[in-house]
Image (cartoon, rainbow, N blue to C red; front, side, top):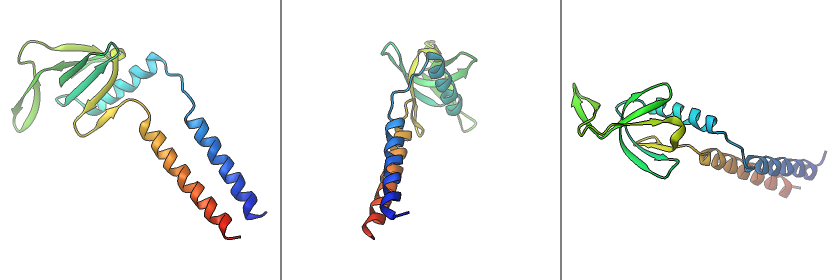
Length: 140
């Protein structure tokens, strides 16, 4: 087979991959809640977070407790035995259902929710393969 044919097949395959990865994906509320729950568990208790809710509100604080369907955010912390411990200093703890969360951020982890990283990685990979294919076609 000629290099031009192989390059054409490679380019068509990459374009197909790019079009498929950018296609709108239907996400259910349950999928989002599961993703947020996994993110909260990854962040863990006693860490500072910023939570964006589906109704537009933003809540900042520290994760005090993680439950089966929700987590509790409080407004303060204390240092106990060289560890940060979330503390409800003003009696204003907020229990947030995972299904109410649009996005959660934690210092050092970044925004969790969405697929921007995956799309970026796919785009970089596709660009590299395309460039490689063009370089091969130039050598004829």
